[in-house]
Length: 99
Image 1 (tube, rainbow, N blue to C red):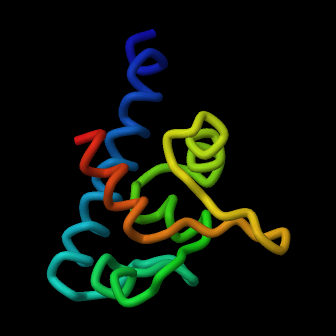
Image 2: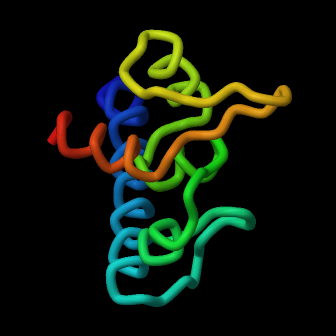
Image 3: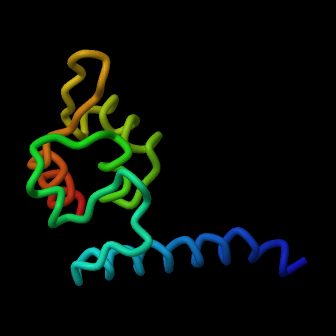
């Protein structure tokens, strides 16, 4: 009974540990364990716009969460030519507002 109750929390803790390891790797300049197509913060600063997937990775949330934040007006995005792109400065501003 207790194991069933704790199972979702243990899975969440494991997920958070993975994300922390990824952030540590990014901050130290290592790019190991970074999913394909995603950038570290150092690499992101050299680009002007990022995709939803790249933004989600940098914020540590799902793609769906990023889309929801765009729809709610928390993150401004460009929806030109059927592709959603988010300016790097907007991502940085969102991080500063929410932390």
